[in-house]
Image (cartoon, rainbow, N blue to C red):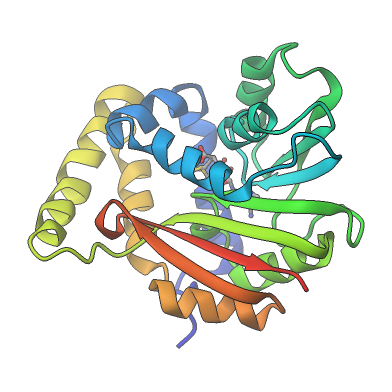
Length: 244
Ligand code: SAM
């Protein structure tokens, strides 16, 4: 099976995703808090704890599909004065909100790049860490994004991916389905006036490969020591890997 492949042509899929995030950019952070009941904060903190950027040495970090900067800000706060983060996203509206949120707080330790995860405008072996949070399921060709992640990391570099997964607690799966198919599009309509966008996002979660299959894809891109762990009963999975 080819996960990520669907009947929707590639260009069309990315177009749809872009329209969603242009339309919700201004309300994106509020929506995250409402829809996850604040849980996305804990998930992102767990991601950054796992990354564990050096507080004393230089650490060059790339956050792909970085959106409004949530993960980047956390990496900068956890790291030291020599931690630098590039926030990369295909969507200028999301990055614009990110720039405003960052303000002057991090000076030139943060930079924003508008680009596609499938083809990074960045040099080989130029980063110590790569994260992608709730972004990879939106990328039409996941295999290309993973190859690019591998290319830009230095040997010894760390790859971490946070993504919605499959609820594996009996009983909770039905509650989760009801929540995501009924509640999420409704919150979407009330807050952004756009239920359809959120319907689309819920569907993209269903189509994303299960954790073991995704771990295989990460390995196929050249990564080693690939592990994954479920969080919140499998609502989310954190995949970790190393470039050797
Ligand atoms: N990482 C942020 C967070 O956790 O709050 C944002 C996640 S948001 C659900 C998904 C992001 O992926 C959007 O900002 C969207 O523009 C971005 N995105 C979608 N397709 C992309 C691609 N091909 N390359 C880079 N970013 C992409």
